[in-house]
Each structure stands twice: as C-alpha cells, then as structure tokens.
Image (cartoon, rainbow, N blue to C red; front, side, top):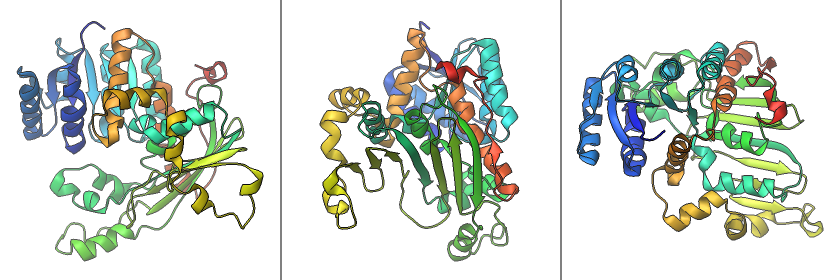
Amino acid sequence: MDKIKIGYIGLGGRGKSLLTDNILPQGESVTAVCDTYPDRAEEGANLVFEAQKVRPAVYTDYHDVIADENVNTIIIVTAWEAHVEIAVAAMKAGKAVAMEVGGAYTVEQCFELVDTYEATKTPFMFLENCCYGRRELMALNMVQKGLFGEIVHCSGGYHHDLRAEITHGRENRHYRLRNYLARNCENYPTHELGPIARVLNINHGNRMLTLTSTASKAAGLHDYVLREKSEDEFLKDKKFAQGDIVTTVIRCANGETIVLTLDTTLPGYYSRGFTVRGTKGMYEERTDSVFIDSPEDRGHDFDWRKACGGNAEKYEEEYDHPIWKKFLADGVQGTHDGMDWLEFKAFFEALKNDTPMPIDVYDAASWMAVTALSEMSIARGGASVDIPDFTKGKWHHVI
C-alpha cells in the first residue's frame, strides 16, 4: 500500500488515547473519523485537525466510513459488540482492517471473520498490544533460545479493578456495564492469551483443543454500588450476571495446559499474571522473576525470593527481544509502556510492505472464541467444550 488513509471508528476513552498518542504521531493520514455519538466524532475530528492541519470527514455511521473513497484502511476501536460486524464489512469492501481486542459473542462470528478474510484476502490485524510487552517478548525470546527447556504450562490473567468504570457505564457511555449485567464468561481473554499463544506456537504447529470455565458468584459490583453509588436507582437493585472470578483451563494439542483468570470486580492490584513454566526454568510476572533450575536451588530451604525475586532485570541485556532493543535505542513512545506504539508500527509496516500481519485473523478467531466457549462451559456447570480449528488444519503446516 503506497499511502495509508485511515477511517478511524470509535472515539471513547481508549479510542482517543490510541489516536492522539500512537497513531497521529506516527504520521499516517487520518481521512475520516466516526462515532455513534456526534460529540465524540466531532472531538475526534478536532484532534486530527490539530495534528494534521487537515480536517477529516466526520461520520456517525460506520457504513459511511467504509464507503468513503478517501479511506483505504479501517481502525476499529468501538464497543465489543460491533468489532466483528465492522471488520467483516470493511474486508468485503477491500479496506484493510486493524481491530481492537475483545471476546467474541458467538463461535459463528469467529468463523465469519476467517471466512471473509479467506474470500477477500484483505489485510487484517488483531490489535493485541500485550504481545508487544517488554517482559512478554523477553520471555518469548528466552523460550525460543531454550532457556526454560520444554514448555509445559502457561498461565495469565486480567487482574484489573474495573468497578468504577463498569458502574459508571451509563454516565460514561461505556459498553462494559451492559456486558457485566447480561453475560457470565471470560470476557477479556486476549491480553494474557495472546503472549501465551506465541510462547506455545498456537496456530503455528500447535493449537488449543478444549476448555473448561468456572465462574464464582457475582458479589463485587453489587457491594461496590451499595457502598459507592447508593444513590444510583438504576443499579442498586440490579443483579450482575458476570462472576467475580472466572477460571478457564485450556488443553493444547502438544500437551501443554493454559490457565486464564478474569478478575475485574474485586479490589486488588493490576497484573496480567503472565507465567511460563518449563522443564529447566520459569518466568513469573507477578514477582518479575526468572528461575533457572540448578541443584543448589532445590528443596524447601532455598529462599527463592531472596535469590530470584524481582531479578528479571538482570536478564535484559542478554535476552531483551530485538524489537525492544531497537525501541529502547530509538526512544520508547506511546501508551501502555510503549506496547500500543509498537503494535501500530507493526501494522503500518506490514501494510506498506505487503507482508503478513504479525497477529492475523486466525489468531483473532482462536483467541476471541474463548469468550463464547467459556460462556457455554460456565452455563453447563464447567463442562469441557471443544475449541474449533479455525485454521482448518493449516496449523500443522505452521501458517
């Protein structure tokens, strides 16, 4: 693609942040903006004009953005429910797509995403920024160099206290509120699953076979509303469907297991809990620690916290991923510690060079499907559910 001309859809808090801190500073042209709320769309247009000195077209219907002849690339940062619908329409129109993360509502949506891509071959990238996290990439580099031996198990979570964001959903026009009222599932799996999928070569010689999900009761949000928003007549008697803690266990074709944890409605500190376990060692995000097996470091008398706690920094010089070594040398930019900048840089470079997207449609379908499948499993009392092969057998050949 010679010149990228972006139609930017979705200008809530996340949308504005990505636009102002990660897209406009990279110098690509934003020719149209869109949001269902006119005030947000106008604010987005003003932000673009301030940066580019050219005012973009302004729309409130995504169909108009896709139809705009001055747009060849669609970036989707809307509510979760609209992601796949917009992506499919854009690909059918031949417009390249970058789609923000979120879980799927049905498995059929995931197949539709894949089928549309295979029919149109329109470039598509899933915007999972955590695949570009410094520690996630360092751990991946260590895995690929054999430092942890054969990988057996990985775990991760979305541990993020979102009670204020969720319960102020009506005031802030935020989609999470309606989802937490109506659904009980692993609703945000890809921050932890994306980096784990890279470590385990999911869709590239390995795949996820089955999952089971279990949800705790839903008590955190109701308690929060009674204590912090007791005047809210709409919420004070509402029953939330979403369990406070959702645990999902996944079994892979090559024998590894994955545990995912959703934890967003109880008090606690932020963590993605990224952990990699192998026959020779491990990495753990919560303590930012690397443990390498040695005879003297075994047994109950070994003080691992003193020896290894927070020691990952010592491995940076040798094992920081090349992407991050260059990023540090050039100067880290963007939000979420630079992850957002790197994902868009990768997207734009792939478009310009006509190279495969680093996080493709098969990744998107596989990771997003966990949400719909977890909802099925929870509803069936934690029953095992098969995970479809969205590559249709191509994972054997390392797509």
